[in-house]
Length: 476
Image (cartoon, rainbow, N blue to C red):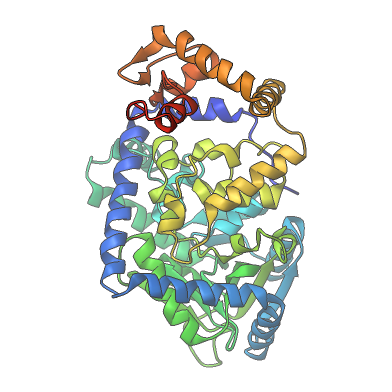
Protein backbone atom coordinates (compact mmCIF):
# COMPACT_ATOMS: atom_id res chain seq x y z
CA UNK A 1 0.00 0.00 0.00
CA UNK A 2 2.87 2.36 -0.79
CA UNK A 3 1.87 5.83 -1.86
CA UNK A 4 1.69 6.04 -5.64
CA UNK A 5 3.94 8.65 -7.30
CA UNK A 6 2.03 11.29 -9.25
CA UNK A 7 1.40 10.49 -12.91
CA UNK A 8 2.44 13.98 -13.98
CA UNK A 9 6.24 14.28 -14.37
CA UNK A 10 8.16 16.42 -11.91
CA UNK A 11 9.17 19.09 -14.41
CA UNK A 12 5.57 19.38 -15.62
CA UNK A 13 4.42 19.92 -12.02
CA UNK A 14 7.06 22.60 -11.57
CA UNK A 15 6.06 24.35 -14.80
CA UNK A 16 2.42 24.36 -13.72
CA UNK A 17 3.34 25.89 -10.36
CA UNK A 18 5.47 28.56 -12.00
CA UNK A 19 2.52 29.56 -14.19
CA UNK A 20 0.26 30.00 -11.13
CA UNK A 21 0.46 33.75 -10.59
CA UNK A 22 -1.32 33.71 -7.22
CA UNK A 23 0.96 30.95 -5.89
CA UNK A 24 4.02 32.92 -7.00
CA UNK A 25 2.88 35.81 -4.78
CA UNK A 26 1.13 34.08 -1.86
CA UNK A 27 3.67 31.38 -1.07
CA UNK A 28 6.76 33.66 -0.94
CA UNK A 29 4.82 36.22 1.11
CA UNK A 30 3.64 33.66 3.68
CA UNK A 31 6.94 31.81 3.96
CA UNK A 32 9.02 34.97 4.27
CA UNK A 33 6.71 36.22 7.01
CA UNK A 34 7.06 32.93 8.91
CA UNK A 35 10.81 32.96 8.37
CA UNK A 36 11.30 36.50 9.67
CA UNK A 37 9.06 36.06 12.72
CA UNK A 38 10.92 32.83 13.47
CA UNK A 39 14.18 34.76 13.73
CA UNK A 40 12.73 37.29 16.15
CA UNK A 41 11.00 34.63 18.27
CA UNK A 42 14.12 32.50 18.59
CA UNK A 43 16.23 35.55 19.41
CA UNK A 44 13.93 36.26 22.36
CA UNK A 45 15.03 32.98 23.93
CA UNK A 46 18.57 34.27 24.29
CA UNK A 47 21.37 32.15 22.82
CA UNK A 48 19.03 30.48 20.27
CA UNK A 49 21.82 28.27 18.91
CA UNK A 50 22.27 26.67 22.33
CA UNK A 51 18.53 25.95 22.49
CA UNK A 52 18.67 24.36 19.04
CA UNK A 53 21.71 22.31 20.00
CA UNK A 54 19.88 21.10 23.10
CA UNK A 55 16.80 20.22 21.03
CA UNK A 56 19.01 18.36 18.57
CA UNK A 57 20.66 16.42 21.38
CA UNK A 58 17.24 15.40 22.73
CA UNK A 59 16.10 14.19 19.30
CA UNK A 60 19.39 12.39 18.64
CA UNK A 61 19.25 10.61 22.00
CA UNK A 62 15.59 9.67 21.48
CA UNK A 63 16.07 8.21 17.99
CA UNK A 64 19.23 6.37 19.07
CA UNK A 65 17.16 4.71 21.83
CA UNK A 66 13.85 4.58 19.98
CA UNK A 67 12.97 0.99 20.87
CA UNK A 68 13.34 1.73 24.57
CA UNK A 69 11.20 4.86 24.55
CA UNK A 70 8.49 3.40 22.31
CA UNK A 71 8.15 0.43 24.65
CA UNK A 72 7.99 2.78 27.64
CA UNK A 73 5.32 4.91 25.96
CA UNK A 74 3.25 1.86 25.01
CA UNK A 75 3.40 0.50 28.57
CA UNK A 76 2.34 3.88 29.95
CA UNK A 77 -0.64 4.14 27.57
CA UNK A 78 -1.83 0.65 28.41
CA UNK A 79 -1.40 1.32 32.13
CA UNK A 80 -3.80 4.27 31.70
CA UNK A 81 -6.39 2.06 30.02
CA UNK A 82 -5.56 2.82 26.38
CA UNK A 83 -4.73 0.35 23.62
CA UNK A 84 -1.61 0.42 21.47
CA UNK A 85 -1.48 -0.83 17.89
CA UNK A 86 1.87 -1.42 16.17
CA UNK A 87 1.78 -0.88 12.41
CA UNK A 88 4.75 -2.04 10.35
CA UNK A 89 3.46 -0.43 7.16
CA UNK A 90 0.63 1.71 5.79
CA UNK A 91 -1.63 -1.29 5.23
CA UNK A 92 -1.32 -2.39 8.85
CA UNK A 93 -1.95 1.16 10.13
CA UNK A 94 -5.06 1.57 7.98
CA UNK A 95 -6.38 -1.83 9.01
CA UNK A 96 -5.84 -0.99 12.69
CA UNK A 97 -7.97 2.15 12.37
CA UNK A 98 -10.64 0.37 10.29
CA UNK A 99 -10.86 -2.44 12.84
CA UNK A 100 -11.39 0.06 15.65
CA UNK A 101 -14.08 1.82 13.62
CA UNK A 102 -15.89 -1.42 12.75
CA UNK A 103 -15.85 -2.63 16.35
CA UNK A 104 -17.27 0.70 17.57
CA UNK A 105 -19.89 0.99 14.82
CA UNK A 106 -18.44 4.29 13.64
CA UNK A 107 -20.31 6.17 10.90
CA UNK A 108 -18.72 9.64 11.18
CA UNK A 109 -15.11 10.61 11.93
CA UNK A 110 -13.76 14.07 12.70
CA UNK A 111 -10.04 14.64 12.25
CA UNK A 112 -7.50 17.19 13.34
CA UNK A 113 -4.55 17.98 11.08
CA UNK A 114 -2.21 15.03 10.76
CA UNK A 115 0.54 14.56 8.18
CA UNK A 116 0.97 10.88 8.96
CA UNK A 117 -2.68 10.15 8.14
CA UNK A 118 -2.12 11.98 4.83
CA UNK A 119 0.86 9.68 4.32
CA UNK A 120 -1.39 6.65 4.89
CA UNK A 121 -4.20 8.04 2.67
CA UNK A 122 -6.40 7.14 5.61
CA UNK A 123 -9.40 9.24 4.54
CA UNK A 124 -9.74 7.32 1.29
CA UNK A 125 -9.85 3.97 3.06
CA UNK A 126 -12.34 5.14 5.69
CA UNK A 127 -14.63 6.54 3.01
CA UNK A 128 -14.41 3.24 1.11
CA UNK A 129 -15.93 1.64 4.24
CA UNK A 130 -18.86 4.03 4.04
CA UNK A 131 -17.60 6.21 6.89
CA UNK A 132 -17.92 9.99 6.59
CA UNK A 133 -14.61 11.73 7.29
CA UNK A 134 -14.44 15.44 8.10
CA UNK A 135 -11.21 17.42 8.35
CA UNK A 136 -11.69 20.07 11.03
CA UNK A 137 -8.56 22.21 10.73
CA UNK A 138 -9.80 25.16 8.65
CA UNK A 139 -7.08 24.84 6.04
CA UNK A 140 -7.49 21.07 5.80
CA UNK A 141 -11.29 21.49 5.63
CA UNK A 142 -10.91 23.82 2.64
CA UNK A 143 -8.52 21.38 0.97
CA UNK A 144 -10.84 18.43 1.57
CA UNK A 145 -13.90 20.21 0.19
CA UNK A 146 -11.97 21.14 -2.96
CA UNK A 147 -10.57 17.64 -3.48
CA UNK A 148 -7.08 19.07 -3.14
CA UNK A 149 -4.06 18.16 -1.02
CA UNK A 150 -1.99 20.21 1.48
CA UNK A 151 0.83 22.33 0.09
CA UNK A 152 2.57 23.23 3.37
CA UNK A 153 3.08 21.37 6.64
CA UNK A 154 1.54 24.10 8.81
CA UNK A 155 -0.41 26.15 6.24
CA UNK A 156 -2.10 23.54 4.03
CA UNK A 157 -4.23 26.02 2.06
CA UNK A 158 -1.60 28.73 1.56
CA UNK A 159 -2.05 28.39 -2.22
CA UNK A 160 -5.79 29.23 -2.12
CA UNK A 161 -7.22 32.71 -2.62
CA UNK A 162 -10.01 34.06 -0.44
CA UNK A 163 -12.22 34.26 -3.52
CA UNK A 164 -11.64 30.56 -4.19
CA UNK A 165 -12.62 29.79 -0.60
CA UNK A 166 -15.71 32.02 -0.87
CA UNK A 167 -16.85 30.22 -4.02
CA UNK A 168 -16.22 26.84 -2.41
CA UNK A 169 -18.19 27.68 0.74
CA UNK A 170 -20.96 29.31 -1.31
CA UNK A 171 -21.49 26.07 -3.24
CA UNK A 172 -21.67 24.20 0.05
CA UNK A 173 -24.10 26.74 1.54
CA UNK A 174 -26.31 26.86 -1.54
CA UNK A 175 -26.13 30.64 -1.54
CA UNK A 176 -23.62 33.40 -2.18
CA UNK A 177 -21.52 34.18 0.90
CA UNK A 178 -19.87 37.61 1.42
CA UNK A 179 -16.25 38.23 0.54
CA UNK A 180 -15.32 38.62 4.18
CA UNK A 181 -12.83 36.45 6.05
CA UNK A 182 -14.76 36.56 9.33
CA UNK A 183 -18.04 35.60 7.63
CA UNK A 184 -16.38 32.69 5.84
CA UNK A 185 -14.76 31.50 9.07
CA UNK A 186 -18.10 31.73 10.90
CA UNK A 187 -19.73 29.60 8.20
CA UNK A 188 -17.06 26.92 8.55
CA UNK A 189 -17.40 27.01 12.34
CA UNK A 190 -21.15 26.41 12.19
CA UNK A 191 -20.76 23.52 9.76
CA UNK A 192 -17.98 21.90 11.75
CA UNK A 193 -19.74 22.29 15.10
CA UNK A 194 -22.51 20.01 13.81
CA UNK A 195 -19.93 17.40 12.84
CA UNK A 196 -18.14 17.55 16.20
CA UNK A 197 -21.36 16.97 18.12
CA UNK A 198 -22.44 13.97 16.05
CA UNK A 199 -19.11 12.22 15.41
CA UNK A 200 -18.47 8.70 16.70
CA UNK A 201 -14.69 8.83 16.40
CA UNK A 202 -12.02 11.52 16.58
CA UNK A 203 -8.69 10.96 14.85
CA UNK A 204 -5.68 13.10 15.67
CA UNK A 205 -2.01 13.02 14.97
CA UNK A 206 0.55 13.47 17.70
CA UNK A 207 3.17 16.18 17.76
CA UNK A 208 4.72 14.25 20.61
CA UNK A 209 3.93 11.35 22.92
CA UNK A 210 5.64 11.59 26.32
CA UNK A 211 7.21 8.19 27.00
CA UNK A 212 7.24 8.39 30.78
CA UNK A 213 3.46 8.91 31.09
CA UNK A 214 1.91 8.09 27.70
CA UNK A 215 0.32 11.53 27.25
CA UNK A 216 -0.34 12.78 23.70
CA UNK A 217 0.64 16.39 22.93
CA UNK A 218 -1.05 18.38 20.14
CA UNK A 219 0.24 21.80 19.08
CA UNK A 220 -2.38 23.79 17.13
CA UNK A 221 -3.64 27.31 16.52
CA UNK A 222 -7.29 26.26 16.38
CA UNK A 223 -9.52 24.67 18.99
CA UNK A 224 -10.50 21.79 16.71
CA UNK A 225 -7.84 19.49 18.18
CA UNK A 226 -9.48 19.66 21.60
CA UNK A 227 -12.93 19.02 20.12
CA UNK A 228 -11.67 16.01 18.17
CA UNK A 229 -10.02 14.44 21.21
CA UNK A 230 -12.74 15.12 23.79
CA UNK A 231 -16.21 14.98 22.18
CA UNK A 232 -16.38 11.67 20.22
CA UNK A 233 -16.66 8.45 22.21
CA UNK A 234 -13.54 6.99 20.54
CA UNK A 235 -10.22 8.82 20.14
CA UNK A 236 -7.53 7.38 17.88
CA UNK A 237 -4.11 9.07 17.82
CA UNK A 238 -1.94 8.10 14.85
CA UNK A 239 1.76 8.67 15.48
CA UNK A 240 4.84 8.26 13.34
CA UNK A 241 7.13 6.11 15.48
CA UNK A 242 9.75 8.88 15.71
CA UNK A 243 7.45 11.35 17.47
CA UNK A 244 8.07 10.04 20.98
CA UNK A 245 9.85 12.26 23.56
CA UNK A 246 11.40 10.75 26.70
CA UNK A 247 10.37 13.14 29.50
CA UNK A 248 8.34 16.23 30.31
CA UNK A 249 11.60 18.16 30.69
CA UNK A 250 12.57 17.19 27.15
CA UNK A 251 9.12 18.17 25.92
CA UNK A 252 9.50 21.61 27.50
CA UNK A 253 12.61 22.26 25.39
CA UNK A 254 10.96 21.10 22.16
CA UNK A 255 7.88 23.22 22.86
CA UNK A 256 10.13 26.26 23.09
CA UNK A 257 11.60 25.77 19.61
CA UNK A 258 8.65 24.21 17.73
CA UNK A 259 6.13 27.09 17.60
CA UNK A 260 8.88 29.70 17.30
CA UNK A 261 10.30 27.86 14.30
CA UNK A 262 6.92 27.18 12.73
CA UNK A 263 5.01 30.46 12.96
CA UNK A 264 7.18 32.74 15.09
CA UNK A 265 4.94 32.32 18.15
CA UNK A 266 6.31 31.93 21.65
CA UNK A 267 3.55 29.40 22.24
CA UNK A 268 0.84 28.09 19.97
CA UNK A 269 -2.72 29.18 20.77
CA UNK A 270 -3.55 25.63 21.86
CA UNK A 271 -1.05 23.20 23.32
CA UNK A 272 -3.30 20.28 24.26
CA UNK A 273 -2.27 17.32 26.38
CA UNK A 274 -4.60 14.33 26.33
CA UNK A 275 -4.54 11.60 28.91
CA UNK A 276 -3.23 8.70 26.87
CA UNK A 277 -6.27 6.67 27.90
CA UNK A 278 -10.06 6.84 28.22
CA UNK A 279 -11.67 9.47 30.42
CA UNK A 280 -11.81 8.46 34.08
CA UNK A 281 -15.14 7.05 35.25
CA UNK A 282 -17.59 9.75 36.24
CA UNK A 283 -16.07 12.49 34.07
CA UNK A 284 -18.42 14.01 31.54
CA UNK A 285 -15.73 14.94 29.03
CA UNK A 286 -13.35 12.69 27.18
CA UNK A 287 -13.55 9.51 25.12
CA UNK A 288 -14.70 6.11 26.29
CA UNK A 289 -11.90 4.49 24.30
CA UNK A 290 -8.39 5.63 23.48
CA UNK A 291 -6.17 3.99 20.87
CA UNK A 292 -2.59 4.87 19.89
CA UNK A 293 -1.48 3.64 16.45
CA UNK A 294 2.31 3.69 16.14
CA UNK A 295 3.35 3.76 12.49
CA UNK A 296 6.65 2.52 11.09
CA UNK A 297 6.01 2.59 7.31
CA UNK A 298 9.69 2.59 6.36
CA UNK A 299 11.04 4.65 9.25
CA UNK A 300 12.87 1.77 10.92
CA UNK A 301 14.89 1.23 7.72
CA UNK A 302 16.62 4.55 8.41
CA UNK A 303 17.83 3.56 11.87
CA UNK A 304 21.55 2.97 11.98
CA UNK A 305 22.10 4.58 8.58
CA UNK A 306 23.46 7.98 7.63
CA UNK A 307 19.84 9.00 7.04
CA UNK A 308 18.80 8.46 10.66
CA UNK A 309 18.92 12.20 11.28
CA UNK A 310 15.91 12.58 8.98
CA UNK A 311 13.87 11.10 11.85
CA UNK A 312 14.86 14.01 14.10
CA UNK A 313 12.35 16.25 12.27
CA UNK A 314 9.61 17.80 14.44
CA UNK A 315 7.51 18.95 11.43
CA UNK A 316 7.73 22.68 12.07
CA UNK A 317 7.98 23.69 8.40
CA UNK A 318 10.92 26.05 8.98
CA UNK A 319 12.94 24.45 6.20
CA UNK A 320 10.11 25.08 3.72
CA UNK A 321 9.92 28.71 4.75
CA UNK A 322 13.66 29.19 4.26
CA UNK A 323 14.03 27.25 1.01
CA UNK A 324 14.35 29.39 -2.14
CA UNK A 325 13.10 26.50 -4.28
CA UNK A 326 9.96 25.89 -2.19
CA UNK A 327 9.21 29.61 -2.20
CA UNK A 328 9.07 29.55 -6.00
CA UNK A 329 7.22 26.28 -6.71
CA UNK A 330 5.12 25.65 -3.57
CA UNK A 331 4.31 22.25 -2.14
CA UNK A 332 2.35 20.47 -4.87
CA UNK A 333 5.29 20.39 -7.26
CA UNK A 334 7.00 17.91 -4.93
CA UNK A 335 4.17 15.47 -5.52
CA UNK A 336 4.17 13.81 -2.10
CA UNK A 337 2.77 14.46 1.36
CA UNK A 338 5.96 16.09 2.61
CA UNK A 339 7.32 18.99 0.57
CA UNK A 340 10.28 21.33 0.74
CA UNK A 341 13.73 20.14 1.80
CA UNK A 342 12.45 17.64 4.37
CA UNK A 343 10.09 16.19 1.76
CA UNK A 344 12.90 15.94 -0.78
CA UNK A 345 14.77 13.83 1.78
CA UNK A 346 12.03 11.84 3.50
CA UNK A 347 9.84 10.91 0.53
CA UNK A 348 12.48 8.93 -1.40
CA UNK A 349 13.63 7.32 1.84
CA UNK A 350 10.15 6.14 2.79
CA UNK A 351 8.81 5.40 -0.70
CA UNK A 352 11.93 4.52 -2.68
CA UNK A 353 13.39 6.31 -5.69
CA UNK A 354 10.91 4.99 -8.26
CA UNK A 355 8.77 7.97 -9.22
CA UNK A 356 10.55 10.22 -6.69
CA UNK A 357 14.08 10.29 -8.13
CA UNK A 358 13.84 13.98 -9.05
CA UNK A 359 13.21 15.19 -5.49
CA UNK A 360 16.81 15.13 -4.21
CA UNK A 361 17.65 17.46 -7.11
CA UNK A 362 14.89 19.96 -6.20
CA UNK A 363 17.36 21.98 -4.14
CA UNK A 364 20.08 24.55 -4.64
CA UNK A 365 22.06 23.00 -1.74
CA UNK A 366 22.41 26.49 -0.29
CA UNK A 367 22.05 25.21 3.29
CA UNK A 368 19.26 27.64 4.25
CA UNK A 369 17.20 24.66 5.47
CA UNK A 370 19.93 23.62 7.89
CA UNK A 371 20.28 27.19 9.16
CA UNK A 372 16.54 27.31 9.88
CA UNK A 373 16.05 23.82 11.32
CA UNK A 374 15.36 23.93 15.09
CA UNK A 375 17.06 20.54 15.53
CA UNK A 376 19.92 21.25 13.09
CA UNK A 377 19.27 18.44 10.60
CA UNK A 378 21.92 18.68 7.83
CA UNK A 379 19.32 18.38 5.08
CA UNK A 380 21.69 19.64 2.38
CA UNK A 381 24.16 16.86 3.22
CA UNK A 382 21.40 14.24 3.15
CA UNK A 383 20.29 15.51 -0.27
CA UNK A 384 23.85 15.10 -1.57
CA UNK A 385 23.94 11.57 -0.14
CA UNK A 386 20.69 10.73 -1.90
CA UNK A 387 22.07 12.05 -5.18
CA UNK A 388 25.11 9.84 -4.64
CA UNK A 389 22.85 6.82 -4.06
CA UNK A 390 21.01 7.59 -7.28
CA UNK A 391 24.30 7.76 -9.17
CA UNK A 392 25.36 4.42 -7.67
CA UNK A 393 22.09 2.94 -8.93
CA UNK A 394 22.73 4.45 -12.39
CA UNK A 395 19.42 6.31 -12.38
CA UNK A 396 20.69 9.35 -14.25
CA UNK A 397 19.51 10.00 -17.79
CA UNK A 398 21.69 9.03 -20.77
CA UNK A 399 22.69 12.61 -21.63
CA UNK A 400 23.57 13.41 -18.03
CA UNK A 401 25.77 10.30 -17.84
CA UNK A 402 27.51 11.23 -21.10
CA UNK A 403 28.04 14.82 -19.93
CA UNK A 404 29.70 13.79 -16.69
CA UNK A 405 31.82 11.17 -18.45
CA UNK A 406 33.02 13.86 -20.82
CA UNK A 407 33.75 16.19 -17.90
CA UNK A 408 35.72 13.47 -16.11
CA UNK A 409 37.67 12.77 -19.30
CA UNK A 410 38.59 16.46 -19.57
CA UNK A 411 39.59 16.74 -15.90
CA UNK A 412 41.92 13.75 -16.23
CA UNK A 413 43.75 15.36 -19.19
CA UNK A 414 45.12 18.85 -18.43
CA UNK A 415 45.87 19.61 -22.09
CA UNK A 416 42.24 18.80 -23.03
CA UNK A 417 40.87 20.84 -20.11
CA UNK A 418 42.92 23.88 -21.18
CA UNK A 419 41.73 23.53 -24.76
CA UNK A 420 38.08 23.16 -23.67
CA UNK A 421 38.27 26.26 -21.42
CA UNK A 422 39.60 28.38 -24.24
CA UNK A 423 37.04 27.00 -26.68
CA UNK A 424 34.19 27.73 -24.21
CA UNK A 425 35.39 31.29 -23.71
CA UNK A 426 35.33 31.84 -27.47
CA UNK A 427 32.00 30.11 -28.17
CA UNK A 428 30.11 31.94 -25.42
CA UNK A 429 30.77 35.45 -26.77
CA UNK A 430 27.39 35.84 -28.55
CA UNK A 431 25.62 35.00 -25.26
CA UNK A 432 27.80 36.94 -22.84
CA UNK A 433 26.70 40.20 -21.25
CA UNK A 434 28.81 41.92 -18.59
CA UNK A 435 30.34 38.64 -17.41
CA UNK A 436 27.08 36.66 -17.39
CA UNK A 437 25.36 34.32 -19.82
CA UNK A 438 21.81 35.52 -20.51
CA UNK A 439 20.70 32.56 -22.62
CA UNK A 440 21.98 29.49 -24.36
CA UNK A 441 21.12 26.21 -26.04
CA UNK A 442 19.61 23.12 -24.41
CA UNK A 443 19.93 22.81 -20.62
CA UNK A 444 21.72 26.16 -20.43
CA UNK A 445 18.64 27.89 -21.83
CA UNK A 446 16.42 26.30 -19.16
CA UNK A 447 18.87 27.36 -16.44
CA UNK A 448 19.17 30.97 -17.58
CA UNK A 449 15.39 31.47 -17.90
CA UNK A 450 15.24 31.83 -14.14
CA UNK A 451 18.75 32.81 -13.13
CA UNK A 452 22.04 34.17 -14.44
CA UNK A 453 24.97 31.91 -15.23
CA UNK A 454 28.53 33.22 -14.83
CA UNK A 455 30.48 33.34 -18.05
CA UNK A 456 33.66 31.31 -18.51
CA UNK A 457 36.64 33.56 -17.74
CA UNK A 458 38.44 34.90 -20.78
CA UNK A 459 41.76 33.96 -19.13
CA UNK A 460 41.95 30.71 -17.20
CA UNK A 461 43.21 30.42 -13.64
CA UNK A 462 46.28 28.54 -14.92
CA UNK A 463 47.14 31.39 -17.29
CA UNK A 464 46.79 33.95 -14.51
CA UNK A 465 48.85 31.82 -12.10
CA UNK A 466 51.59 31.39 -14.70
CA UNK A 467 51.77 35.17 -15.20
CA UNK A 468 51.89 35.82 -11.46
CA UNK A 469 54.67 33.28 -11.00
CA UNK A 470 56.64 34.93 -13.79
CA UNK A 471 56.12 38.36 -12.20
CA UNK A 472 54.15 39.61 -15.17
CA UNK A 473 51.30 41.83 -13.96
CA UNK A 474 48.73 41.09 -11.30
CA UNK A 475 47.24 38.03 -12.97
CA UNK A 476 44.04 39.78 -13.97
